[in-house]
Image (cartoon, rainbow, N blue to C red; front, side, top):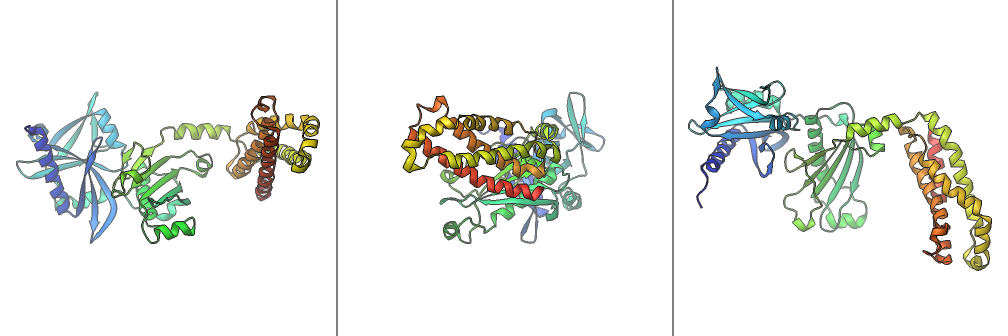
Length: 411
């Protein structure tokens, strides 16, 4: 089978761009897995060290892309879909025209200033004197993704989620301020690099297994605010997998934007909508506590009642029927209070932990009501019902201690 001329031309253009970038001190990584509209990543290398500062590169090869000129610039045309992708990419994106006859590569960054709308599509003016050579290096360096100071974001949680075949970390961070998409991409790359080098282990067995090795999988979750973190409204998530990790040992991946070194970012398109909705539902501290405090007292009273009223294992045969007869009011109340807790106004960030713990307690108490409902009689024996109810009461009592502690912290 004969190779298509267009394929050969495209490969020659990529090779020409690679040589040009590498002469300028960049590592050039062609994207072997098709990334819509991005042919390669170029990372600046200083000395022997990778900087983590990148450019996205789209390469067009052949005389057809050099046939249209206006003044001293070549005209490159693209549809709105591609331009929107490039402009909103987490990396600065260069469109490069490879002139194979003259061994030259012309470039232009694509952004809202350089992409000119023609009504239905866009055009990009690429200066004929703007070539990938030493004269362009200062401009290229200025466009590289930035290094974000560590104090502009806060690592809230580092979790060791390793297993026997792969060392893995999950990292969650909140942004301290407003950031562009490119800046968030830089934060993700920094956190991924730092995360891969961590040596935290959840126990001595995991430490014994992985010792001084780097992580092979790193997830990063970015939150725009502490309220988002409390509500698990992620701004974006990312995943990096060491290319050498065997396929059988890899976690489930997701679709997203490749921001360099195989780090894939999934941007949450519903973030702003959910954040706005949650903001409108959120109450003040005084409103929330005014509604929540009486319910906490009711839950505490129910816990005490069930601790005393549930028959002990030794007396369960004698006391089981008596418990059900005399506890109908409390059982009904347990079923109702769960709904009341879930109908509370949205808790402000300061009250989130109280709200979470109260829902856990209410869930335990509601489970007792479910166990002794008419629909559950056929599902469990009386012995199992008593055992499960006792477990729910014990869990509720333990969580109530944590709840009261958190409540004292915010009063």
